[in-house]
Amino acid sequence: MTDLTKGPGSPEPLPAVDGAPAASHMLDVDDIEVRYGAIRALKGVSFHVDQGEIVALLGANGAGKTTTQKTVSGMMRPSLGSITYEGQRIDGIPAHSLINLGICHVPEGRHVFPRMTVDENLEMGAFRFKRQDMDVRAHVLDLFPRLQERIKQQAGTLSGGEQQMLAIGRALMGKPRLLLLDEPSMGLAPLIVAQIFDIIRQVNADGVTVLLVEQNAAQALALANRGYVLETGEIVMSGAGKDLLADDRIRAAYLGEEIAAS
Ligand SMILES: Nc1ncnc2c1ncn2[C@@H]1O[C@H](COP(=O)(O)OP(=O)(O)O)[C@@H](O)[C@H]1O
Ligand SMILES: [Mg+2]
Image (cartoon, rainbow, N blue to C red; front, side, top):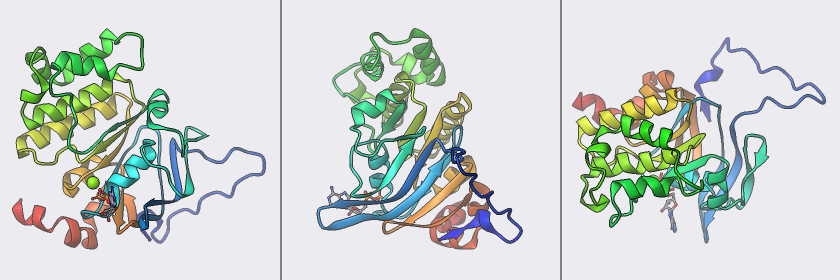
């Protein structure tokens, strides 16, 4: 694995002191293997996310990005390895319990409840609480004025971009500390994509840590503190967002079309 943070002259990590707690990341994914029957979708994936970061997970179709997020959010179990969140082992804990620990996943394909209104969808996002927090709701509607305008509209009649906004807004109603976003910009027009990326920046500035899966590599890396590149179930490269963005291999593999188009 190429780690761009470990270039010549980078400081060596300090050795662990006996008895002292290990430096802890918010999320530590350690050497997980995940299978679909005989298919090994993840072959020993390790990465971490620190509190307050935006971390991008990049890779071609089928690389294992969605599988990685599903495993972190408890929708899948690793057959090997471990996942630690805020000091607690979470692999094997089901998704509905992880929501109570503050891990919220917005899966690819924006699954809003189509027959419910925007209003009702947002309320559903707060289901882990007795009642929705009206301050959080006001904040979400500030972030997404389009949702406020369409508050009584059935979610199934919203545009793709509005449904993505609603999916993110609904997740925020659950007051996540770690937000997993799977290809939030997929299939959206460039103007809407820019809005979605702006929202992610604001949500992060509000204190939510983000693990972002994206095909829009250039925009994701411009936003992310750090990134990892997955290739057929293995992490092959990692580093600061800006270093990955400048790396020739990344540019050739993932940014070719975007650079040519810009
Ligand atoms: N439900 C499934 N059953 C069998 N194989 C799957 C299933 N979902 C994903 N895979 C396989 O796992 C690998 C990783 O898929 P995925 O995590 O969806 O990749 P990505 O999100 O990076 O496109 C691929 O080879 C894919 O075909
Ligand atoms: Mg995917």
